[in-house]
Image 1 (tube, rainbow, N blue to C red):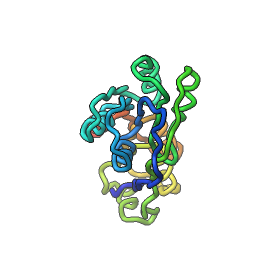
Image 2 (cartoon, rainbow, N blue to C red):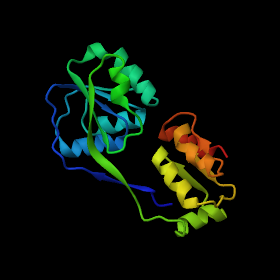
Image 3 (cartoon, one colour):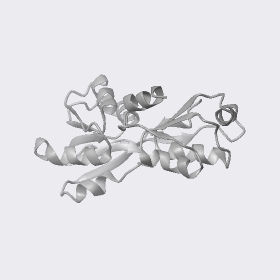
Image 4 (cartoon, one colour):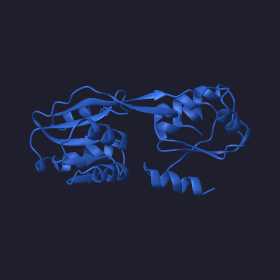
Length: 203
């Protein structure tokens, strides 16, 4: 199935004045930041191993992985606060899934976000061949990586309930709109690509 969302890098200049560390909540954020700025020396806090691997591959040397979700990322940053000075910057999406800045502020850590990419819905619609194949059972599986993707697919189904097929979601939040639409999504045991693939194979 074609992606539900397309990633587009923004072109606004970045300001790193006073920034002592970076936090990334997706590989897309890492890739978009790397295209916009050559900074690679700041400590990086990554939400999961996939995001950490993306940062290492793009030249960041000091990378710590929370190996979980945004709550785990907040806990990691809080535990390692003494490892950086200044504010923390989260380069991310136009519509982030969670409010990392507020969660860190509640722990006395100054954090700000900047938009480095946006996700735009692709041309899929309820009459698209891929959606029809999902409903009919011809499409074996769909992987949902975000709550927004879950909402988009739920809207496309528009009352149609797929025959038993594997809809694998990265989190409870991503699965919620699909469950409300009458689907029975499978939720990965851990918010990572590896866990999603494991859930896909356990059928």
